[in-house]
Amino acid sequence: MEKILDAILAGERAALGSLPVPESYRGVTLHADEVSMFDGLPAREKDPRRSLHLDEVPTPRPGPGEVLVAVMASGVNHNTVWSSIFEPLPTFGFLSRYGRTSPLAARHDLPYHVLGSDLAGVVLRAGEGVVSWRPGDEVVAHCLSVELNHPDGHADTMLDPEQRIWGFETNFGGLAELALVKANQLMPKPGHLTWEEAAASGLVHSTAYRQLVSANGAAMKQGDVVLIWGASGGLGSYATQLALHGGAIPVCVVSSPEKAETCRRMGAELVIDRAAEGYRFWKDERTQDPREWRRFGARIRDLTGGEDPDIVFEHPGRETFGASVYVARRGGTVVTCAATSGYEHVYDNRYLWMHLKRIVGTHFANYREAWEANRLIAKGRIHPTLSGVRPLAETGQAVHDVHHNRHQGKVGVLCLAPREGLGVRDAELRARHEVAINRFRTGPGGGPGGAGR
Ligand code: NAP
Image (cartoon, rainbow, N blue to C red):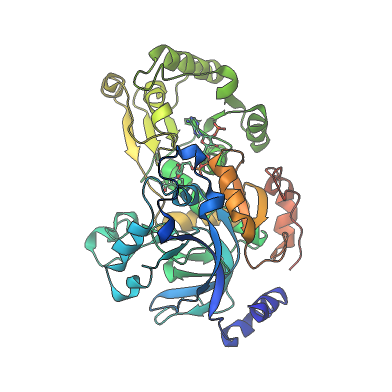
């Protein structure tokens, strides 16, 4: 592994194809024999620092259409939180179901699961039939893994019946020194970013792009009022930027003055601190309080000069969904990709049908959408929202922090990269956007990224 890293750091990328691939590598894993370790505990008390391990595991050989990547940096996503607390289901069921589909997929069904759905790194080996990528290419990966053997997947690959999220529903993920991906997950690494910055955007930015911008999602247009829950979080920090960049008017909802300030630093003017204003949409576990929906709706109108949201960017789920349906404007869209606070949503359907609103379900992004999202990053139009970085050995702590909502934007993880600030190739583009790239840097390991190799 040392020789591979030396070659990358020395800029000798052409040499990578001839260096031997190590037989094993370090990766962040879950163990199949520990899936019951948190039984009986409430979700908040399930501690990722106990379930996540850093193990030496055998290197998989890339099969047809696959690529082995030397991972310089990765990042924490909420799916790593779900995996690490074994909710709503242990991920080993996904691996064994996948394993039954083909001999190639059977390699994923192991008693350990290497997690991680983002990476920035360098191609080490390309399997048979891979024509777009070769050893030495600097890449980022999006997390859509598809088989495309069925006609359903060919208009929109998210509709492939064998669609999976890499590093969550498949093995050999990005929180590791090496990762195995399909060639059609790869995209060029944005040259002006460090490894850890480049690894921050793949999952959440592509998701937010499809959810908000794509015709497969809410098809946002100029002037739309967009209510964004968790606007300084993983998804929300990109949704806020996409709204501003696309000429829409974000109304950002957050839960602290610091997070409100972060939204303002991104350029948002309309911000609601849900904690300070004390909204309680549920009177008790079963009963919602429509007066609180109205109070929330009135606050949005105060900020917008009397307008209701054309689009509500939903992901908190049960706790907020009733309010989201209520506050959307007549003919408006509630677009949802998640249910962090609970997946059994309750809303008053009269507000939906009488006011001709739509609920649109959305999930990750197809290759084209992920590519378009990455292009916006590469051109310096949308910026990574990295607030802190930890070494691979501290991934458990990083996941714990995200589980407890102690982060903003994204938390990065250094895999092979020996320190932050490496990997910038386009210093001129970086210099133009340095301030915007660093506006989230407040967390552990924070500080401006440098411009080394
Ligand atoms: P994140 O970084 O943790 O941010 C989520 C934000 O939502 C939090 O920072 C919090 O912001 C807000 N929030 C959480 N609980 C809330 C509640 N009960 N009421 C109101 N706001 C609440 O997570 P993320 O990366 O944005 O992901 C959010 C969810 O989407 C997760 O469940 C994740 O698994 C899912 N997701 C799905 C897809 C997909 O493809 N389907 C892709 C990415 C993520 P404040 O405290 O500041 O309000």
